[in-house]
Image (cartoon, rainbow, N blue to C red; front, side, top):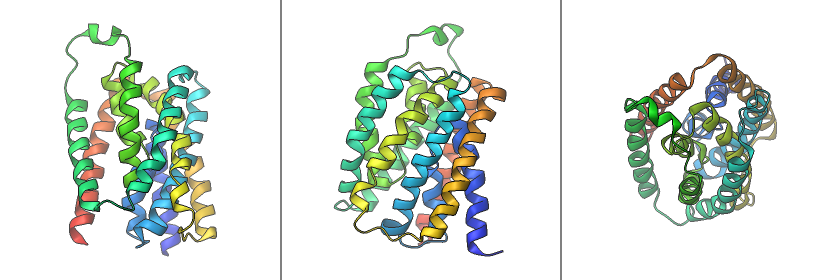
Length: 249
């Protein structure tokens, strides 16, 4: 089996998983595609950001069919993340990557720990979601995600859950909030990106299908508590994989 087929199959699986969480696939596509494409800045990051936008958009379609999207917070968060994501992509060209990854690992370790904490009581589920704090945190999240080329969804989803949003609604909001910044973060890469058009087109089709299927699986079959736990597991697995890749280079 050649590398193109392996990339398509792997991305299909990753897109379904990311679609279930409304993340966009970049958080997993960056380390995965980095195994096949060795130019992080000019191949992997631009392609991953575009795939992130496509998979998040089709995941949004899947959640919208079940009426899970809370449009007002989703649109407001999308505006904030879209404005700040290009700043992160620009900073990535001027900041030592070791500092970026250090921030990333600290953030995901904290979020994974919080995802596995048991609920304090049933009353916590009735707490009003804190949209104002979500909007304040969305700006640094978008900047950090833009610097790493992974899209803001991987950090924004657990933040929304911790701020009081039910996990399924958080995933649906996240799908919209990460779609436009994924494309806006591409702007600093446009002049220097080197992506094979045929490979890119194949992965976009695969990613779109996977994102939609994943969202439908969550909408119809996955309880909110299980979705939260699944995200905690995903953080641990992908962080360990990313760290191994960094140490092996």
